[in-house]
Amino acid sequence: MMKNIILETNTLTKSIPTSDKMLTILTGIDLAVHAGESIAITGTSGSGKSTLLGLLAALDTPTSGSIKLFGTEVGTLSEDQRAQLRLGKIGFVFQSFHLLDNLTALENVMLPLELQSNDASVRERATKALQRVGLGERLNHFPTQLSGGEQQRVAIARAFVIEPQLLFADEPTGNLDRATGHEVEELLFSLVHDQGTALVMVTHDEGLAARCQAHYHLDGVLVRQGGSV
Image 1 (tube, rainbow, N blue to C red):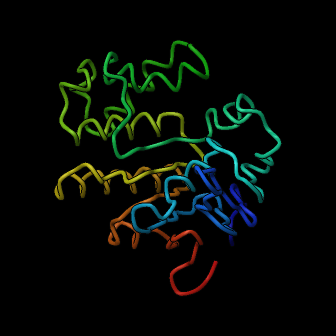
Image 2 (cartoon, rainbow, N blue to C red):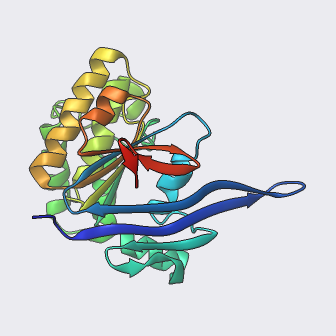
Image 3 (cartoon, one colour):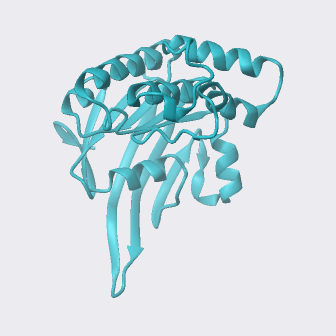
């Protein structure tokens, strides 16, 4: 049985002004993401993948069309309201890790928990999250003291520590060598499976995309591999 839809777009369009005209980046995007479903979006550089991810995550608003996130129409919300909608429900993993250099691995993972509450369990939960990604001995290391693979593991622990319903991943293995990227890939899909998290991932890696339940190609318009969305 198909699970509930937690993210849905309808004829989504995004245009930006240039010096002499409006540049349309995305046109007529229709997409539905069900709870626990994994979706990959591939496309060439400049095809609009990161723009689409920002819209789906309610970090940006469309020029036209609609986005429903957890049943709420995003276009009617203020920036603060969109942030509140994401809080505790959405995790992010980026190609460039986006860790805070002045915080330890433990403090980076604690951060999203502290945005929700600051009770006594925050440190314990963050510690367990880092132990789960194999960094139990790196709790007090700063990002600059960690390898790229270790930094991405911290980022994954930070994303999953809140037990998100939905995870957005933007080229999660893009800055890693092949062997390290494979380890991070295995970890990511293991946590997605174990926690029942829905995954929307942008990637250039066709092998990574093939592991997802659905695979779409984006070049301004979104096409499901094997047919149109």
